[in-house]
Image 1 (cartoon, rainbow, N blue to C red):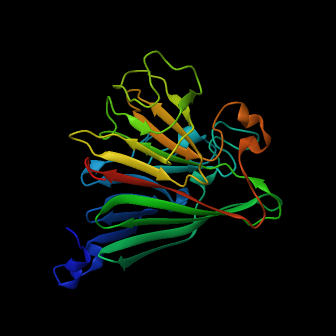
Image 2: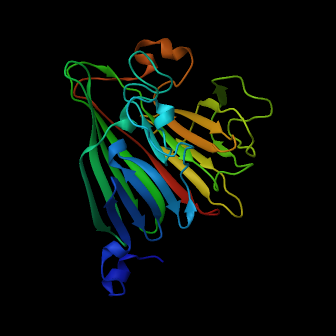
Length: 316
């Protein structure tokens, strides 16, 4: 299929919504695209991405937590998984000072949420936009203006953010895009391909483990958190095989110069997190001012984001 708009032009399909469906239900914006991806956008969780499907195949990891117990509980108790969880803009990694684990974005509702469907060339395209405010009366005031774009015929979703400091003081702003991949595309022997010099692990590497290679599931297998030093190309690829496609994660290298990964192959968990970031997730750099995060000056903006694509083997 080369032209999805041809189906509406010649009358075989009466409404574009049959090819590019958007439904709001139960606090979720469900996007379903012919020849593309199906995924949920979560307005109450910073316009992050929940469940995602490529045809009949799930892509996103689902956490062992069946429900979110709500405010007052920690990140790990409230984390339900999903294709994308954004960490920051006050903290990434372990709790620091008054900031909890992985910050506030993923648990902050978006405002001014809007979606649209439009014709772009030979395809129908869906846009979801909104603003995630991180503000206080006498402290930092950061706005994240988010745009999510996906297209018929292209099994990919792109999340783009404009991060604005609308306050009067410079602010250290750590950001990390927590892309969570699960079975069946994540499988024993699957390797994440990254062009980098080396990997530094947060804890000693368990015997026989490789931060980029997913083993078979087993009881009690420990998570491995690593930073990949000297990353080139702003791309990571979960290699497919004869039965599985590649999963390609790309990001804005200028504003996200670092890459971390989280491999937790324990039975009942089984996840690979691909995590482009702008700040150290662990290590001595977190003792620097702003925990090593870059500083956003008053009135300044960053343009940043991540793209997740399912690519059949053999495609360019």
